[in-house]
Length: 301
Image (cartoon, rainbow, N blue to C red; front, side, top):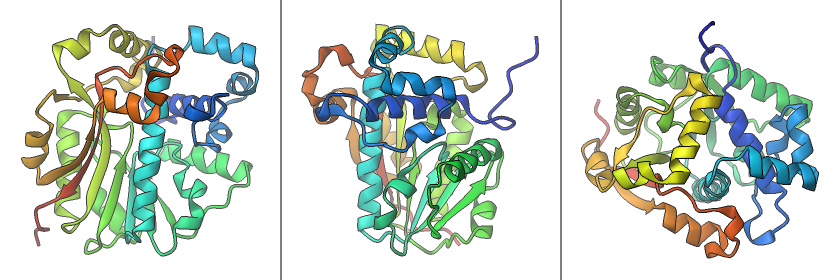
């Protein structure tokens, strides 16, 4: 049997799965937890569209195909990163970099807020090609401020690719790194954080989600089922990276960052999921956390 093709040679399967979950959430009948990503469905395959609008098909998918806690987590994650992205635009941040943009639709959903901010979408070439095809097919305008930069996160020279696309190393930058860290090696994560710290001035920041590792979190039934589901469906995009529980601040400090915001799974349930009003949603597995951290070290050179 041939080895599964990696995201470097085909469009990312996990990015496709994330778009499907966001589309499901955008059609949730419950207004309090309805997802905000109204464009997610344009990135779906034909067989993924039926559960979006057919209640019976939706119920079957939610019961048989969605791992416990995954829907709750994805709903919370979309809302969190939407807030962070909008705040960066409203603050007229000179540059926004989407690291592993996948099928992120924020530059298109919030196009009216962009003004003079330059936005750089980084991802593998196959995923970017499919995304552009979907945007064009759906006739979604691409703002002039948006640039697409194909990269390989495990090996690519990000600084060179970005500067060639017009990125200015002297400008304050907001880096959004959603749903990516899990699938990278620890060395690749370190390279990414080193790049952000060294190639952007103080006041720049990075926002990302990560696995908070502890024996309790790893043993949690929802987390076990979710990890098994991802492993079985996306063998070429296996989870690799996490930060030990309680070590986030020291981990980031050692890499030149100060943590300004940190949300645990319990925080997500309270803030984005109607504080447990809908038990059928399940709970966000305690494995997951969100963080926003600011660059503290001055740029070298």
